[in-house]
Image 1 (tube, rainbow, N blue to C red):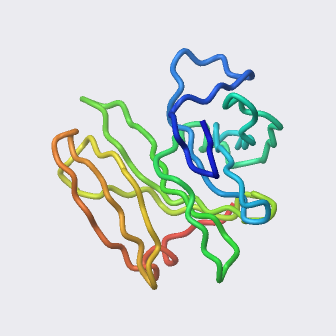
Image 2: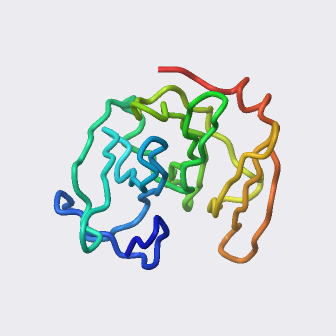
Image 3: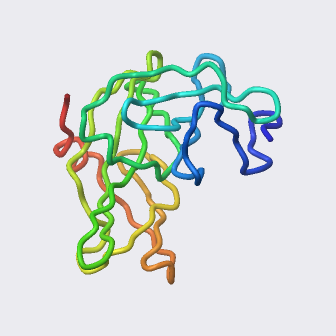
Length: 171
């Protein structure tokens, strides 16, 4: 349930979904309306409003690169006011000898929600295979990320915005 723009429960209902398991959706705030929105899918990007009884309503579909069919949500969207952008940290899973997780930053326009750019794939730690992003925050010229390795530990890292900007790809 959304109360005063805060999530008070974790169940959202999507009438368009054919999934058996509901996960990997991401919350962010609509900057103009100051209301929560949900990125439900990344290919094509499907953004919903949250209606009565946590029903996802008013679907908006936005074109994204075909690669995004493999992208899954990880962290909430973070607004970068100086660029009028919303940044997300997402992941893709590679099924090899076991699952490997690779991460990428995805950037959308804060007004139109149109895809602008994404980063190259990266890992938090070279030796780990299973990594989950838990959250991120943009502070000054860096991004702080909380993440888990093998579901056993919580770790934190900082990434300089200059490195990220140097590794962004446009469509």
